[in-house]
Length: 118
Image (cartoon, rainbow, N blue to C red; front, side, top):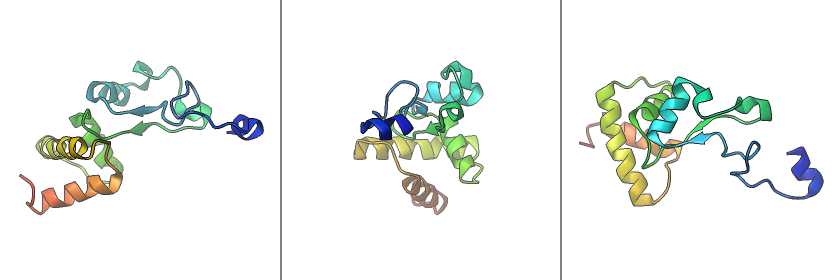
């Protein structure tokens, strides 16, 4: 950020090493690998460059990402619940043509718990 401010140039979000999305993971197998061992896909810790790891939840996400993301919300899902929610997450992401926001994930979860989703 300092270099960006000093030079008057913005850093592209996917810029190697310092782009804010460099540590964003969506693909199911990729995200699962990072959750099990970050060194699988990250040569160094995001904190070393002032960033944070992000799990992006969208059409390519897998069950491990759903379980981890809801754990961030303080919600422990069963494997079956995660799979059911994942089906709705993928369908919604395809319909919207983008990854989902946290509030949308919570909305899907609430509808699932209320029996509004199959």
